[in-house]
Image 1 (tube, rainbow, N blue to C red):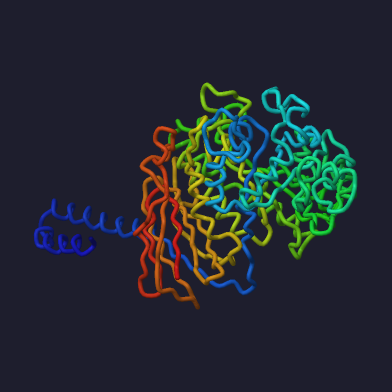
Image 2 (image 1 turned 135 degrees about the horizontal axis):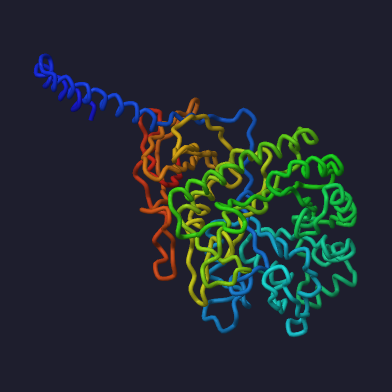
Length: 535
């Protein structure tokens, strides 16, 4: 392109020498060339991927999920009515199970969420026809027949091949109730509770390790102060026992987004000496909590605002991590982002308490960006759980009776599964901004890892909806022979998958990544997610 422009300049030089109009033309043409070169330079990212001197693993648990007894996540999601003509084991939908197994879901959190602190586990065991009927006062005042309880959840985890993460009831429960639940779950000896478990059909213990001591204790879990919660954590955790074969990984209820005081007080007062980690919750909300914005009808202004708020999670992680570093400089305790994702207004005509929303390409870009951030903070972030798995908030899967559709966000997790338990590779780059009106955000974000076979994977996101950006990557001290890549993108950032058109936004092979000498060149289309594999 540049050769053609300069040829045109030279060809017209004689005319321009004595012609005023020619001079004006020459000036404009030269300006255009300079601007073109400048624009191309601005749209090229020089990226460097290095081996880490002190290897850190990207925990597979960063790719975890969250399923709450909320709306249609459990009932009509995982747990189908007998009248729904889909393949089931008991009432667990096997089409949903198979889809989640494909993305190697590592951990599933249950029963909440806010619901956890009103859930009493004994209501959900024993013969189903004899189980207590309760009212879900948190989400819609609907009657819960408790047909999906402890045994059903752990059977679901078994089918998925994932680990369970149970959030215990601190808000309306007691230390005794939690202690009994743990014995019922994990003890392999003789006791009244193990005999009850066997009577209910489970001979061997489940050996559940991940256990939350409450949920959002600053809000729906009890409206506690951090000082009060610190005492409750110490009291409850004292009676949370590790049984042989089931070492407990306790997770303290942590902060709401930027409540840094909560993290400081809980870390100072408890030391988390017996904990695996402490949680943090952050949702991407485009507007405010009263008017969050539509999941499907939004313009570039709302698109930009959503991405900017999504990127804010890195500042939260940095600042909470800095506080944790004061009390835990060796990073032995995990920061657990066990609720995250975009939260929009519900779909028109649906129950507002059920939090059912559609899922667009924008949401996939938010998921990919968030996962890149978590990967790059894997020394401290050891688990994250997307909210939520089916039919609620930023779902991977939507169902309607016997129909099922995979959302754009699902395909991000399918692309990114290559990072699970791989060695993190640090990246260094500076690239162009995505500017809108008087604001700007980084257009590119990325993360990289090396798996057990030696293959390197780089996940790259271009947030700019109109510009192609070239990524030129160097690998000092590393070499590769082959390049392959996959991409997730679509014509519009509002594009969604529906039951009528379930494959509108999906992963496809990508030929825009190539080896050039010892470098990797990737031409990133607008609003796209690309994962490159180097061998």
